[in-house]
Image (cartoon, rainbow, N blue to C red; front, side, top):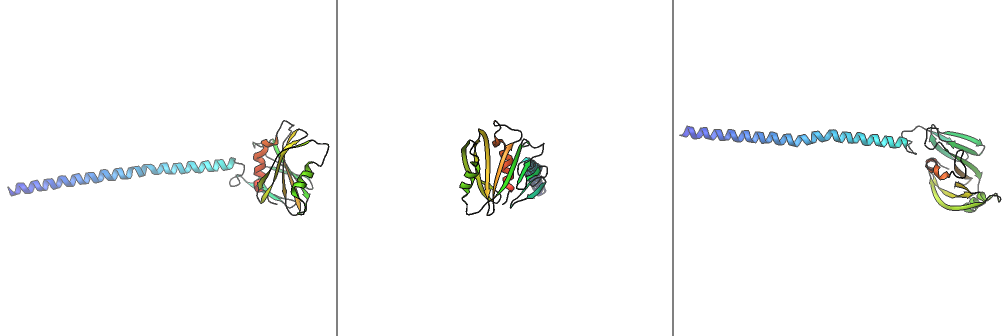
Length: 209
């Protein structure tokens, strides 16, 4: 009778051990499986996000991290532009900037002229005198607002000159006043330079004076 009781006892111990071992293996399997399955998804999400950032940066206006740039300097100013852009000196104190033909801004150009300026002069009066210098032109102001560039702020003037939509940006330092004029290449009065705003903002984002 004792041997039978002992045999039953060992049988129950064996069953409990098998059950406990099986439970442990099942729990271990289900605890590790989600983690091992989630890891590739996390890596894939990281790759996709990284790829998105690079793509957006390369196509964005100020994508200097991935788009090769070149530096320019002149009468108290400096700026950088995509290496594929063309920068021409059209006069001793004027430059013209043209995007490459593949750019969505290819129909735009920016001209910047430098003029002598004294900090004793009132900037708003200087701008008014500059825009209204030719009394034969009909000048109508639509708006005038502060605009930022890399090293400070200037004034963006928007309106019409002889019925042609016109945008002009003015910036000043102790020696120069700068007039920055975006325009549509080959445009007419129906081509609003506001369509060149992306290019203008890219130019201003690197301009220091």
